[in-house]
Structures are given as C-alpha cells and as structure tokens.
Amino acid sequence: YMVLILTLLAFLAVHLMFDERELLDRAISDVLAGGTYTYHVVHPVHSELVGGGEAPIRPLIQLWSLSVEEHFYLFGVLLILLIIRFRKTKALVVGFLAAWLLIGIARFTGHVGPRFAWYQRPDALLIGVAIAFLNAHMPRSWSPRVSRIMGHVATAALVIMLAVVFSGTYLAKLVGLYVPFLVPEGGSLHDGLYWGEFGFTIVSGCMAILVLTMIRCRDHWLVPILSYKAFTAVGVRSYGLYLIHVPLGVLLIETVGRKSELLALILYVPLLVLCTEIAHRWVEKPAMKLKTRMSTPGASGTAQRDAAAQQDTAAQQDTAAQQDTAAQQDTIPPAE
Image (cartoon, rainbow, N blue to C red):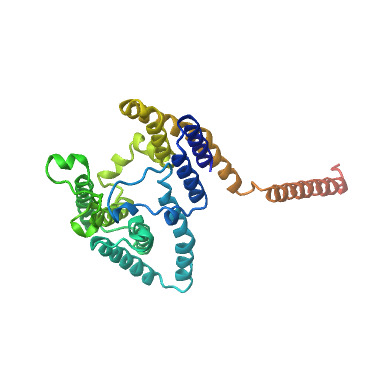
C-alpha cells in the first residue's frame, strides 16, 4: 500500500506540472483496483489482443498478476482444503493438470476466456500446485536412474523454454524466427500465429519440470548457477522490483522522456536499483523482522506472562525444597 500511495502522489505531481489529467485518472483507477485486489477484473491484461493495437500505458499494470494470485489463494486454497479433508488428492492433481492443458488449448485456438482470463494465466498457478502435490506424494528420493533421466529432461526443458522466450524477442527478428505477441490494429488472434497462443503454456510446463527436478536433484548443473549470490540477491529483492519497475518507468517517460527518451532509459536502471534497495532495507527487512518476532513462540504477551509464571513457580519450588533440606539437616544430631 505504500507503493500505491507513493504512485498516486507522484502522478498527481506529474499532472500538476504537465496537465496530464488522463494519466492521473488512470493512476487513481489503478490504485483503487490494485488496493482491492481486483485489478485483473477491472483492467484485464492483454485486452488489446481483441481488435489489435498497442497496450495502454497504465502506471500499475503489473498488479494484475498480484490480484490473480490473491484470488487463487482465496478460492484455490479453500478447494485444496476440501480435497485434503475428503482424501481426493489424486483427483485434485489430475483436475489441475487437465485445466492447465485445456486452458493452453483454448489459448492456442485463439480464445481469450471470460474477461481475458486465459491470458492472465491461472493455469500457471494450477500446474504449480499440481507439481507441489506430486512432489509430496513421491518417494523421499529418486533412484539414480530416475534422477539421471529427469536431469536430462530438465536440461531439455530449459533449452525449449529459452528458445520459446527468444522467439518473442527483438533479436529473433534478426534471424527470422520472430513470433509477434501483439495483434495489428484491426486484426484478430485468428489471423495467424501469435506468441501468447503457445508461449505461456510451454514456458509454464517447462518451468514445472525444472522446479521439480531441481528440488529432487540437488546435483543438477543448474542448481549451483542459480545459487550464485548475485541471483539470490535479486530473488530476495524481487517483490520490490515487481512493485516499482512499472510506475518508475512510466514516471520517467512522462517527465524526463519528454525531452530525451535516451536519458530516461539511462536513468531507469540505476534508479530502479536504488529504489528497490531502499525499499528492501528500510521497508521489507524491518517488516520481516517484525513478522518473525511476532510469530516466534513466546513472543505474545500472554505467552510471556505464562513463561514468567512458570519461572516464579519453579523458583518457589526450589526455595521450598531448600528449606525442607535445611530443616532435615537441623533434625540430624551432630556426630560425637
């Protein structure tokens, strides 16, 4: 919510300086939708794919994924609890994997789902939960043969995933392998092949294989690479990066970018690193320390009072025992 408030204040300042009322209205709408975790419903991502054209510039457009995640926690977790209660775990795994496959087929055939739901990728969450349950019900360790096979499968999955991601980048244009994501103005997803029709499904499937394998095969060659300090440092700060990167970019475009887009681009990376580090050190870390302290056994006032009462009782018992011992010693006649 701090990011929401700061974003609103920043775009209010932009409006006052450059008379950008439309951008301020978008910021207000984004803050309200993001703050109520309904962003993906109010402003469904990739709505421009129907009718074609560029995506609208919105200050907090990245919050669509956070609201999808929160809705999944609400409905998905309740469903999972019911499944566990009635011992239907296998049905849950099969159902989630089937839903992942069906949503992938729907996207591939040009369907976007209700309120563009298929392009907001709930299937990625479904396959993640399915893999977690599969992992929990597998033997504690794989045999050397299975580990070796899955290691090769994971390597192949990584190559496929990187190739698919590459096909949607500018560099792929240089070698004639580019697959566009955006539909031209007035076009349709049915006019040809677009990256979103296959890319999201393949990437999520490959990622599921990679995660399962790296959890099970700690000696896979990718594990030490991803364990490098630089990568783990980015991972620790990833939530701050997620919240900050879009509003900061839009702010630079609407201020510095008015005079020099190159200067805005040059400033973007160092400012993003600086803002993320500030948020990590003075917001995230104190909040995590507070959470840890509050969740530690004995941290609550009641628990502390109970512990103090137990200590007092123990001290009283020790004192009484010492007094009894002294009394017994007094009754023993001295040796002559």
